[in-house]
Length: 446
Image 1: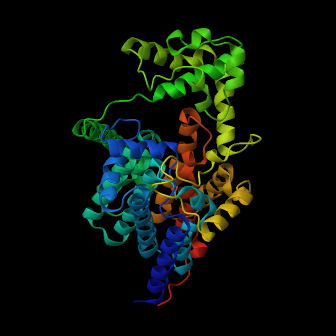
Image 2: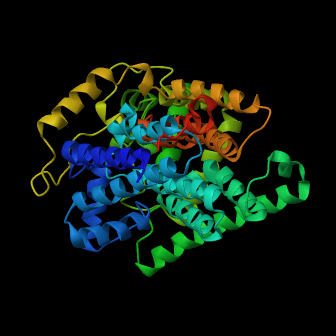
Image 3: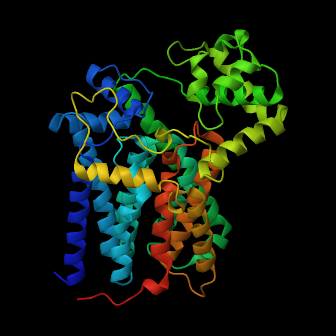
């Protein structure tokens, strides 16, 4: 084994030990606790993607509670980073930096949670890791593994396809070219159309795959989009000065003043203390239709109020605007909701020190999404300024495009200004920089 291989192995071992020592058995938010309650009761719903319950069921058979799932996510995460470090082209500095991205403060903040966002992240990184392996080996089976990993990642968050489709497009190019030859393929209209058709097929497979999982496990369907729709309508009501919520949601007896006092720009949860969300007692098909029609018409009927509402959420999400006294739960939840007695949270000295660091540093620039967008812009311009773009830089371009799209999508769909909704941005941008900078091409030590 060469020196860099030994060093990589030791770094991975250190990272594994750090995360286990500081966070095992992981953190469970209210959502996570709800997922586990369904797992134990056997009464599954689509409140969460069914894939998270299926995988949690497997790990729970080995290690009860969040611990097994935490180790499962951690193993895939570190294996993905190891693949990237092992097969990336370049020198030892690039390889070490990829591994050390696991210690980025924002990752240390978010990764310990048993969240579907983490499932999306680890399987997407695994897909990227396989792509880099494919650049080195040119084996079709590796490229298929990359595509399957991305498909599993999308099953954790369905809206992710709205910003991860460029990676599907990129993978189709790999199928066509075997080895990336350059960017000229994009100028061939026929190739572009066929690649987009492949993206459409991938989306269809993701939707049908989830539907199959739901039917196989007899999961009760829960419609979640009304929680965002009602929040948008409520905030537009406040800005318009008149109550717009539909009567069947309990809006008939609610005043604009009550909405103003009970709702926030940065989260939707407080709204449902005064109206009915439809989760516990579903609406009728006609009510869903009316609500959806009213929701999608907001940007056209009340363009100014809707734009201001979503712009404010986007600014809060990117932390361009800092809401005073923002609750810690929008950043991270360092505990285990509801299951604290059965599965005690990690309260080790290391855990306390990490949490203290996060508390004192979470307002620094390296926690703020807009800072990552700035880095993304610099890396994007740098890549395009190169006379010749290699396959790794080409991949980095697609990662940056997906990152930008994730910000756009979540600015319209996010129900709160939570850091976790931009976890793809936090990880794709440092990885793109590592894949791109030629200054990192130092000779590999042997």
